[in-house]
Amino acid sequence: MIHIFTLLSLLFIPILSLQKNKPKFCINCKYFTNHSNDNIFSKCSFFPREDNNIYMLVNGNQKDKDIKYHYCSIARNYDNMCGPEGKMYKRKYIKRQKEKEP
Image 1 (tube, one colour):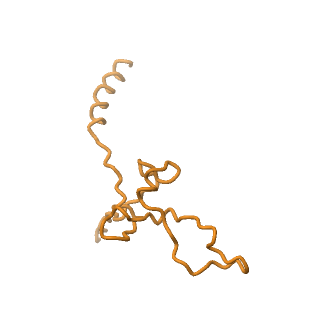
Image 2 (cartoon, rainbow, N blue to C red):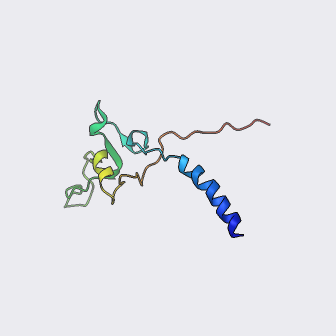
Image 3 (cartoon, one colour):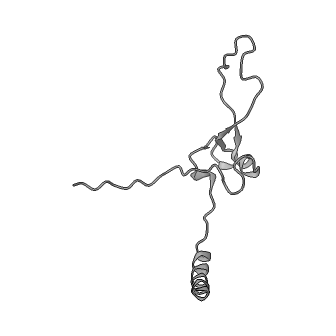
């Protein structure tokens, strides 16, 4: 029994190591927002910046103001956000399978 397990592990470990994980690029993420021609200053819509003055102090209504987001480079640098591995990454384009007609 031990020999079978050893033989199987020797066969499958090299096969698994051949598969490389592709990096998760922000430009392919559904939360990516392009704010300029060069993608260096693009922002992540998953992480809005917290401003202290987003609510009116008198009635508590939200101000009519554009929501500000963190840059993608900031979100990917911090582990409590997306981190280098892209924890919050979701593919922008999902391949749909065609339904077979009866």
